[in-house]
Length: 221
Image (cartoon, rainbow, N blue to C red):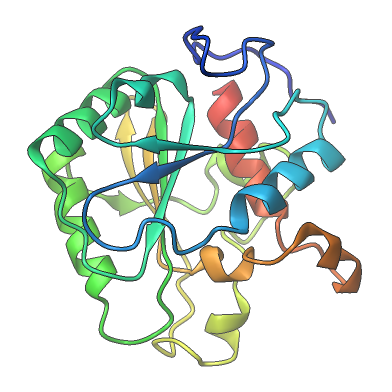
């Protein structure tokens, strides 16, 4: 299956690729530890190149939430372990990004029980874009490329009881019409996908495939 429908993003700029390549962007924010999952971008870039026909840049980018450069990316990944407190500029930009057609994918990088990232990130996202609601497990994102009939795939941290002893059966989302503007995960995909792409050969099942769905959905919805 191919996925090559063009998106409204990115806006041309000499600092970014101009060949129409998808650039995997990681959000930099002033609070917390935004750079807690440095191996995830390369791993998902590898999967997009391996499984799809999408033109993809070989390296990712880091974009400050408060910068206008945010609007050059169709999809931005945000993660961390620590409490999240957006500045006024970050909050305003997240709202504008969502309203203008961008998609923010937020993943809680914790697998402990105190939930500092989760509680504060949900508060900040609600202030920026409105309440997060359960995303139905029949949503098109679960069939955007690979098929996930049961909804979001579970992570090893959930199944091994390393986290809050819960398997989170749904993701959360803030919508703009019928489009996901913010996708929020409690599942710690940041840890699940945080390994060098060469190590995929040791896996019976490639656990990054849902990441491909997220990217394809963000580029073609």
